[in-house]
Amino acid sequence: MIGSVGQQSGIAGAVTMNGPKAVSAWVASVNASGGLACHQVRYLVADDGGSPAKHAAQVQQLVERDGVVAFVQMNPALSWSGSEKYLVAKKIPVIGTDTSYDMVYNHPNFFPQASSGKYSVQATVGAVSTSFSPEAKANFGVLSCQEIAACTYLADNTKSLADMFGLTLKYTGRVSITQPDYTSACVAAKNAGVKGLYVVLDANSVHRLARSCASVQYKPQVLTPGTGVTPSMTGDPNLEGFFQGLMVAPFTDPSIPGVKEMTSVLARFAPGLDRSGQTPVGWVSAKMLEHASQFFPAKDALTSADILASMYKVKKFDAGGMTAPLTFTPGENPKPFVCWASTTIRNGAWVTASKWTCK
Image (tube, rainbow, N blue to C red; front, side, top):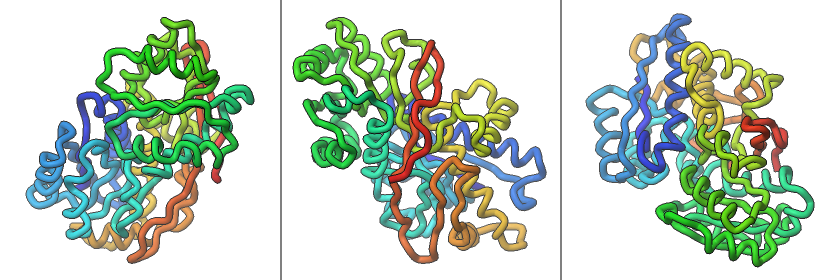
């Protein structure tokens, strides 16, 4: 029994819910083929509405009432604080997340599948460096939210991050994801001469930003983390040429074995699920568990300790070329890494912009 608790609805859920949906498709595929190491998989997904208190209660309920022995693709971008202590104390494996917090590197029972927290910010700034034109990189700006930890890290380290990737910083701004309009931010960036804008906002806010900038005839190159992307973006003419920075290899490249497999499984078991944003991030989480299943003990009822022991045997696993080689060691915290790719919207569809790169 595995589970996920996080935002499956609302502003945050609009961008994070596809991760668990990808895992659900993987579960259906695995069970259709006889199960995971001869175990049928059950996957329970709970919506905490962004409340840390509700998140804590749901995590405890799934473990103590429902028998969940591991969490796969946890997506509580706004509510992680509710479960961290419980999960650590109970030594419950957490296999993959929405990549929003770097606390996943602080505990040996967490298994991040991609650059997370401040390292995800570094990765997406890296994506800027391999996606933007020379003019955009020489006239770089940052616009971040006020609501999540990754935005605070970005705001506090904007200049050093720009320097890290050879970008010339001309503007920084902070806004709220609840703002109905971003015209003032667009005007400020335009007046600063910004040609390339790195934006960390939710998907609906990105639509409003693009509309606001268009209203003042301002069209910079824009990149946002792919973990905040939704299918609606490809249908917005104001976002033509828009980039998403990816924490895993580009889902648009069928030459990557892991992408080819994911595409095939989703076509059969989740045909309406968009492949951008959190979908491939969730898929890689599921594939981590699948890889570890070869180390499961031969017993009917697996425990959290069994899953942990199996995860610690994962060595240099890259999910068919979709992530950096992952290795986990018993009792040791996971080691951070900074890797990225990017896609761009061209004629209303995602295409590869930059290939998989690690710093």
